[in-house]
Length: 408
Image (cartoon, rainbow, N blue to C red; front, side, top):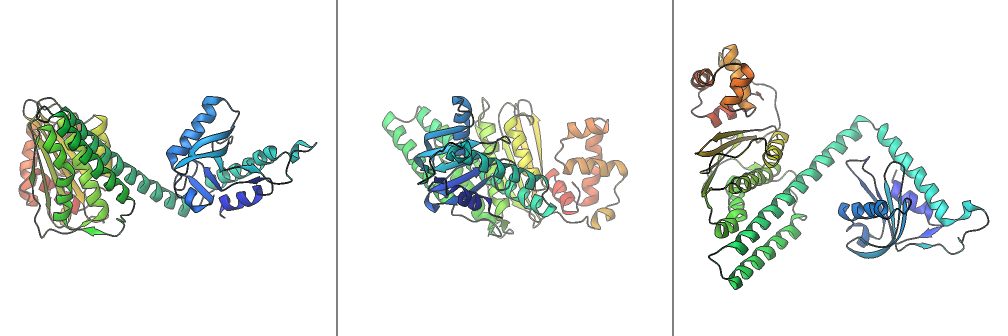
């Protein structure tokens, strides 16, 4: 049932409007339900709807507001009504329908009828979500995850652009006119990129690992030019396996986020980022030469960990006071699979398997030692043994082999 179209039809004898939009956070997958002029409803944003709802609360309008508001990309007359479930109904260019003037009976008042019909619709939405079948919940979760990915991508791009603008404007090596020109060029390029982002479809699209890495270099080039930070890039193999679209997008965003977190420390002059691909996983390493103050518990780093884990990957942060931070990320290129027989053939001892599982989960030596109540030297001893048994030459390779064999 298309509730927005049906509600608009029910309201039309009492209210005329160019568009109707329902905004309800009960439906996480499709919070907006729309009907009316495509030129308006296609441009309605959650930010606009949040602002309208906030104005209802701030102005104490008793759940109703009629006036000018940003809606559908421009200022328009709107009629906004909230509900007991905090859902929002917005009509653009509202006007009482001819012959619908209020009579002696309050139930003939267009305003009362609008509230009555909207209350019924809002309650019906709440009931349907409460009784939703598993298929709806799965679809809703998938849509929410996709919206979160797109939002995070935009946030990362905005962050990089703003950091670059600040670096250009603060640069002592640039005169005022040169700084303004550089900042204008960066802003113009960012706007073009953001406007075309919505036109890109990444579902079921693969991107060559070399071109995905080149796009990362282009993203970070302005920051290198204006901040004085030497960002070094270790190229992935040209013939490496192509990356699924969501992995390529996430990998660039993760590296951008890590670089921004690292250069935010005092004393960082060099950041090195490296990509590799073993055919099963994308292997990322980012290292700085700072004071070793990068915190794995910092909100910015924790958000990156969540993004990695959403792709069934792992991220380990190794901080060395006075020497910098070393971050290793492993992102599987394929969806999770059942454990392979290979892990059983490694003949790992019980403690070695525990160490490998914690390593695969992104824990550093100190964290492994704390969880297993052993010393860091004992952890290093187990790591040397399991590296030999599984045929790994480095920590990142061991993490990749563990993931390839279903260990998380």
